[in-house]
Length: 522
Image (cartoon, rainbow, N blue to C red; front, side):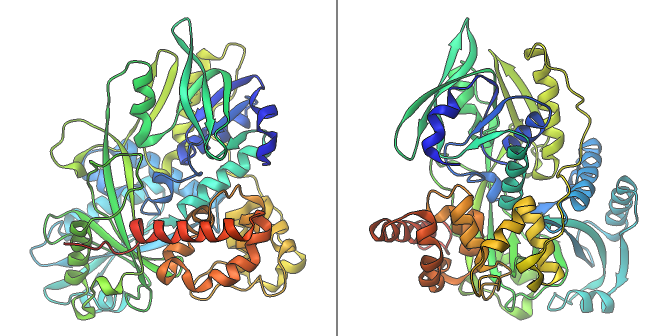
């Protein structure tokens, strides 16, 4: 979208103004726009900047929630996982998990296999099995062998969370929805003590806009209490930080995801292959820092995750020098007073307060369910609007790629269609010589950088390297070695002069060192 068109767009009469450009807001925009509502989404930073680019990247049923008795949530999540595997092939992929059965460590074989049996019944298929110690060690090499009795195998799924948000937004736009990044809410408009829109500020040039809407939906995740405070409501959220490590695949080579209970506190920790690297997570601690600041892993969390790796993979002797990058995100969990953050429930909730509908909690996997629940709650507030709110396919079908794209193998074409949908063909057509090759060490094509710069609302270099692609997490030093070619491909597409490029590069590298590298200090 050309930002010069913003004034003409924002003066329209809107049915719904959605605040928040993560997966929840994107899902609401899609489900609203495909059902005929005039819907506008605004995000104060970049799309998926918050939790939705910093999750554990797992599309899962929530096996751990069975232990907490949250059967309905698990059933719902398993159903949505299966729908995403079908409708978002190439973006959401199956992932096998392996859990070692060690003498004296919980949960034991019987309890774990019972949970997996329930999991399979909910999914309508059998994916679980138990193997002996020798077979398990072959499936998960380098693991601790002491006291290993065997292991449990099961199936879940994984994704690129930021690309999932962008794909959902793309689908919403095809149905008439409008989404604008770097456009934040300065204040809510009130008429007769009801929220009737918002005053917005463009973070790019400081321009202020007034937008009116029949309904305002806050889908701002961990930031929701700030908007609720504008209508006089008390905080309800407990921000929890989850931090992760990324290691080179050669240093921690895995075909299966390996899940374990941390030797210090029994919390679940995992390591699995993701986008050409190995992803390790996650912590679950109260986040006391300002939500206005980009979150980052702490030394304590780094030590916690490395301790889990050294316990599970003792012969690899993994240390902080092996870490390529880190990232941390803040989860929007509804506080209930639990002392242990990991025991807080992950269900979503809806609060209608003085005309502001807030959507809070929930998880990546169930974004469609959350969106439809929000629209059911919104329906009485939108006189004259009626719609069938039964689930529709998450994405529309896209035709196979042709032309230049035929130089790609089948897996690469499926990845592009999953991540870019109807835009995948134009991406391939725009590629210049050599740009349909993958960037070394990744599965990302050079052409995806050109397309991101040209067509995906990039305002800063970190938008391109941390969310349109994940190169800042996959490459040493945040991708410093590819900067010359990146500049050759993207500078003209972005319309930046030399001074702007240099400024953006220095800004990005400083951001990466502060928030995505191994933390320094004690």
